[in-house]
Image (tube, rainbow, N blue to C red; front, side, top):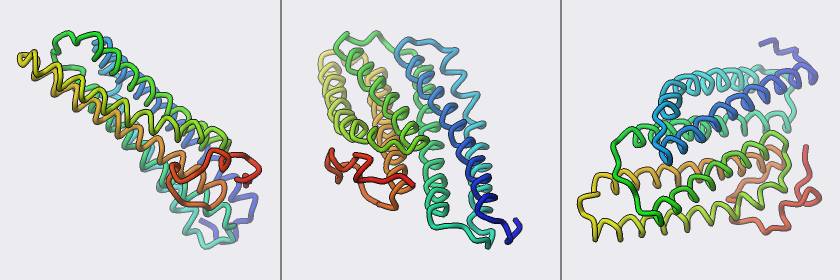
Amino acid sequence: MDATMGYSDYNTMLEELRHDIAHMGEIVQQAVDNANHALLSGDRPSGDDVLAGDDVIDRMELAIARKSIDLLTSGGDITSEQQREVTAILKAITDLERIGDLAEEIALIARQTMAPCPPRITQRLRKLADLVSDMVRIGLQAFASQDLSLLHRLREQEETADIAQRWLHAEVLRHLETAPGDTKAGVALLFASHDLGRMADHATNIGEWAVYAATGGLGRLRGYRPSDFSASLLPLV
C-alpha cells in the first residue's frame, strides 16, 4: 500500500472494511438463526444451509483480516481513531468466525435423532436460543452504528443467558434421572446449550470491541454501570 495515502484514502478503506464486516455479520446472524431453527424444529435443510456456509464465513474472516493488516502496516499517516477502529474490526471478526463455528456445531447436533423433549426443556431451550440470537444482533448493531446505548441491554442479556443456561442444564439432568433412555438426546442438549452460551460470550465480546472502537476503553461490559452507556459519557468518534 502506498505510504503517501492521506486521511481520505484511509477513510475510504475503513468504509470498505465497515461494509465487509457488516456483510459478514449478516451471514453469521443468518447461520445462528438457521442453526437454532434446525435445533428447535428439526428442520434439516436449515442445518444443511449452516454447514454449507461455514467455509464462506472462514474466507470472509481471512479477507477482512488481510485488508485490516495491510491498512495498519501501510506506514502511512493513519490517525489513532482509525487505528483503533481497524483493531476492533480485527478482533470482532474473530468472534464472528467463532460464532459461525458454534452455529455449525449446533447444526450437526440437530442432525442427530433426538427423543421428544418435555415441554419445560423445550421452552427453556427456545428461550436461550432466542436470547442468544438477539444478543448477536445487538452486538452487531452496536458495532456497526457505534450506538453504545444498545450495550446496556446486551450486558443485561449476558447475565440472563448465564442463568438460562444453568436452568436448562438442571432441567436436562433432572429429566435424565427419570428417563435414562434419553441419555443420548440429553447429552446432545447439554452440548447445544454450551454452544449457545459460548455464542453469548462472543456476542458480548463484539459489544466490548464496539466500546473500544468508539472510546479506546477496554473492559468487560459487566464493569460498566447503566449510565456509562449514554452517548454523553461515551462520546463517539
